[in-house]
Structures are given as C-alpha cells and as structure tokens.
Length: 345
Image (cartoon, rainbow, N blue to C red; front, top):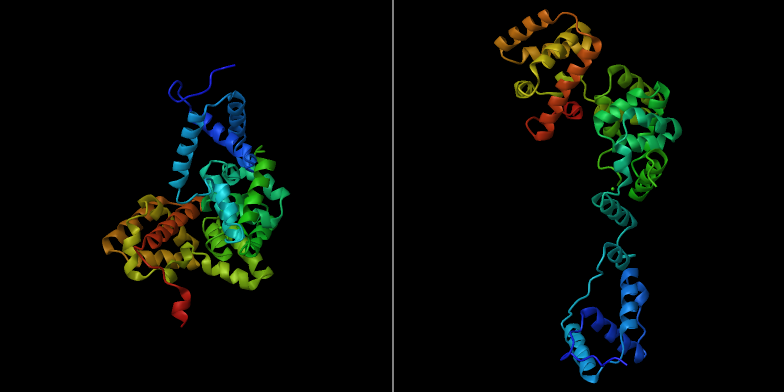
C-alpha cells in the first residue's frame, strides 16, 4: 500500500486537490453537475480520482480549508462562455438580437458562411441566380459590395434581373437568423462548405446597384419595376443618381468641389460622351462646364474635341466615375446633394 499523501512530504497538484474536493463532496452526498464540464475536464478529473489513494487527515484538512478560502472570496460567478451567456439571457433578449450576436461571433471566429459565398466571382454566382428563388438572390445581391452586385445583375437575363430587383422590396423585414441560415445553405451548396437584416431600404439598395450598372441594364430593370409595382419603382427611381441627374442634385457652388476628385481623363471622356449623347446627358455636361472656371472649361472643351468618338462603354464608365466621385463627396460631408422633394415643397 502506498504511503499517505502529506503536504510536508509531497507536493499536491491543483488537479489532485480538485479531485480530493470532489471525492469529499461525493462522499458526503453532494450532487455535482459534472456533466456540464467540458469533456476533456471530465476525463482529467476521472483520471485524477482514479490516481488517488489514501489521503491523510492533515492533507485533506489543508486542501478543504484552501478550497473554502477561495470560495469565500468569490463575489460573483459569470457564465464563462458566449453560449453560456446566451443561455443565461434566454427569454430576456430578443431572438433577433441572439441571431445577430451569433452571426457576429461566427464572423469573428472566421466561420461566417457568408464570407465564403461572397468570395465567389460574379460568374460563379450565376448558377445561384439560376437555381435559387428571386428572394434568396435579392438577399445575395444585398450582401455583395455594390460594384460586384452590379456586375452580377448585368450577367443575368433581363427578366431574371427584373424579378430579383423586385424581390428586394420583400427583404425589408427578413430576420437576421433567416439571413444566417440562407448563408449557410448557399455556402454548403455552392462553396463546398459543410441585422433588421439591412440598415437601408430595399429601394436604396437596388438603387445603389443600378447606379453602378450599365445604362441599358438600369433602364430595363427600372422600367420593369415601374410596371410591376409603381410605388416601389418610384422609390428606386428616386434612389438612382445618374450623370443626367447632376443638374438637379448638385448645387452650383459644389461643382468645383467635386471636380478635384475626378480623374481628368475620366472627366474628359464623361463630358465628351454625354455631349454626344444629347438630351439630358448633354444638359448635365453643359451644367458642369458652365459652373467651373472659364479657363478650365475652355481646356476641357479643347480636350473633348481631341478625344474623338468615345466608345459607349467607355463613356458610361467615365460617367459612372464622375457620379461615384460626387457620391463619395456627399458621403464625406464635403457637399450635400439636393433632395428633389425639398424643391417641390
């Protein structure tokens, strides 16, 4: 039989002390919820209990007194983990908050399924738009960066693009937990992977995407939305800000402020193509030229004449660059865009 443990003859580890306390409590009829411990801790405790033999009175008294002192110093016990904290708050916080917290925790741990989906190229996402419902595709578009969403929308057949754009009107009240489940499903099906949901309105989201879309896609989708749901379509129309809208949305004193942030080559191509396009585009180009210094306007007109015929795609890209610079200035607080409703009052 091995010798009894004594603190004077042998060092007692913390895990051995824990095993002694557990054995003492069990002996006295204590009901310990050991199954709530992590499996590794349960296994270690079992091994420590198995290694115990005879414990002398002095050792047991010393360990028990140490345990009692530490217990008396505890003023508050915390849940100890994120999941335990959620369990302790069950019924006290909303289901939406729980879902949002779970999504944030997943993103921080690198396990957010949406991160896998959003890494797909627009070309790879086409299969999603062909297989999933318009509502799911609308949520996918809403999660994408605006430029990538515009590329994906442009790759869709016209009718499909219209249906997905309209489906954005149905996503306003989608719960965050539903968004998380959709992300998981898309990741599993298309990536090989075993908040309100959005802070802005559906009109603003599809409007921002259409701002970066080719004019042909934008006009086709907007026309379809207006014919299917005029109220939603009008909301999207108001959210759209194109090159032709510049005279109505940009105050005259703000024109010079935004020009400094536009690449000179883009500005020349945008003005030249808009002038060639006539109608509202030409009016917008004239508005910009008329509200800058005479010397700068003369230089630009000379460069526009030298630029020759501008390809339609290059002209649209340049006009989008000008609009993006204006929006960036508005977002930064450098300028304030005119709201059409304010002029009507």
